[in-house]
Every structure is written in structure tokens, then in C-alpha cells.
Image 1 (cartoon, rainbow, N blue to C red):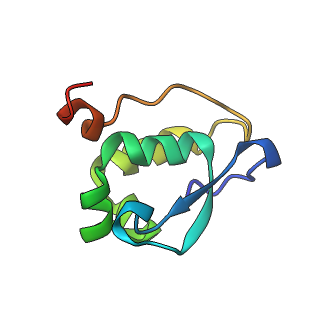
Image 2 (image 1 turned 135 degrees about the vertical axis):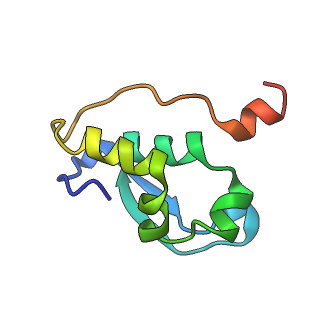
Image 3 (image 1 turned 180 degrees about the vertical axis):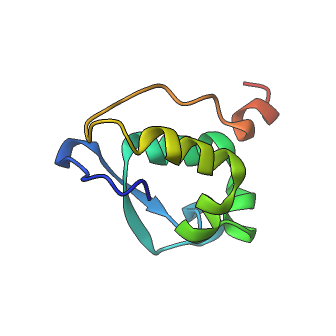
Length: 91
């Protein structure tokens, strides 16, 4: 997604359609990129509209993030914002 090499200790499997919505296909992402996806989108949004890397990156918030993180070193970590999904649950 960000076109950086993914160090082995930073690899996360992202379900293109969330497991909670019946998804099985996964892609490898940096942990920071994976966290950012889940901080921006709910599982319902991912299942309905953002079930490919291309559609995820087309979103303006993700495009801004990818532009920013693309120049970071491969092992770079930073905290993602809290998920809108968790916020809606009152957490």
C-alpha cells in the first residue's frame, strides 16, 4: 500500500473483507498502515466499499496518510487515531 519494504516484525495480515463480515482473503501490510485503515474505516465500510487496496488508498484520509508514511523508514511505528468504530461503541 505504501510501497515500502515490510520488515518481518512489522507484517500484519489485513482481511480485505473483515472476518466479521465473512472475509477470507488477506494482504500483508505494515502494522502502521493496517492500524490506520482500522482507525479510519468501520468493518461495515470496509466490507461494503473499501474491500481492495486501491479503493482504500483512493479515500482522501488514507491518501494523505500514505503520502506521509511513504517517506518513513520501513520499521517506523506511530500510534494511529482511535477507530471510529470503537468511538461509536462508546469506548
